[in-house]
Amino acid sequence: MSKFYVTTSIPYVNANPHIGFALEIIQADVLARYHRQKGDDVFFLTGADEHGVKIVRVAELAGKTPKKFTDGITKKFKDLKKTLNLSNDDFIRTSDKKRHWPGAQKLWLKLYDAGKLYKKSYKGLYCVGHEAFITEKDLIDGKCQDHQQKPEIIEEENWFFKLSDYTNEIKAKIEKGELRIAPESRKNEILSLINTGLEDISFSRPREDLSWGVPVPNDSKHTMYVWCDALSNYITAIGYANDSKKFKKYWPADVQVIGKDILRFHAAIWPGMLLSAKLPLPKTIFVHGFITAGGEKMSKTTGNVIDPFEVVKKYGADALRYYLLREISSGGDGDFTYEKFEKRYNADLAKGLGNLVARVLALAQKAKVKPLKNRAFVSEIAKVRKNSAQSVSEFKFNEALEHIWRLVALGDKYIDNNKPWALKPSSKDFKEIIGSLLFLISEIGRLLLPFLPETADKTAKHIANGKSIILFPRLK
Image (tube, rainbow, N blue to C red):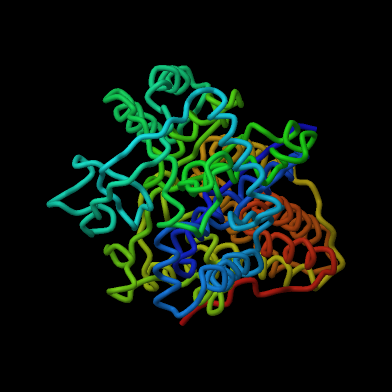
């Protein structure tokens, strides 16, 4: 049994979950379920990034303590597990003093002992949105290009990490594929950034300015900055500080799924920290794009944020999972509108898969028919299984589903060509045709399990009990 450790980024819980993170965690869930289906020992981690200035300010506006505020928002992120039918094995919170803090502080001390942390006075541009210091080259018209806000000018004494010492080593790891960045465009992007030279980064904030966070273990006047706090979650959750057996079993991560806006953090800063602590690098970082709403960036100000809970409440979890995996190119940007969603739902789910399963099971009810291997189907299924597996290995989930839907088209064509409704249910031909179709939809269900787990389970259950089902009612 091979191990497979997959993580999402840990979302910053200053606001409720939106559909962009739903995309990320669903992609990670597909990978986790796919590897479990293969028989691998899978550990799937997600969590919540709960510290920082932005949390403190938002909590104050809400009239709450940071702890009370993050408890409420983090619960909603935890609720995604049930709402989206996720299979994550753990959920780590950076505010967890027993599970997370000891590992984060242990990592800090490893960097300190390696001589890679030093203290200096610093004056720089601080973006509250990023919870990070940025440079002039990160600005457009004097504003952060991601948050459209002017950064604050902050002057203070901080601890710094010697990231610049690892520029060449990180570059070599990426170029050799020892640290795989997918898709290729993101690999080129991070290499271009590294080629300009990595700069040392601020690693702490004065505790008098930021008490909401992990204390620096060898300096009580400072609070850990986001890097050693948030990024360390990937190792603290699997026992870096207190469970060496579990840690050795699962680290390094096989795939870390992140958004394109935090590529630099995960493909430059995180590897530098791991190299300094003499820990293996993750094997692969898969980078997804953004989701827009009707072509516009989602924003609370404009009121166009898509709530995944609302979508699931109206259409079901598998419908949302299918749209995000099928409609949006895995490594690129995508768009969500309810018009596009309902069009894809009706065409692929209601009229496509749902209709095929309903037709076959309705006909199967006329006689006691069991799945029957059909040689022609076996070869096509094997071809689709191979092609979809290759697509998953390349994180092309949309292409994997496209391959599987060819079997849906094959089933529809087989029904139309053989016209089983015109045959007597007691006849040998009827039973062979329906038995072959039952075999086909059972195999489609198995292939769909990582993507649409509820649909796969329902299909298998109804094939077993011989009852028909409407998987996806057509939308009017």
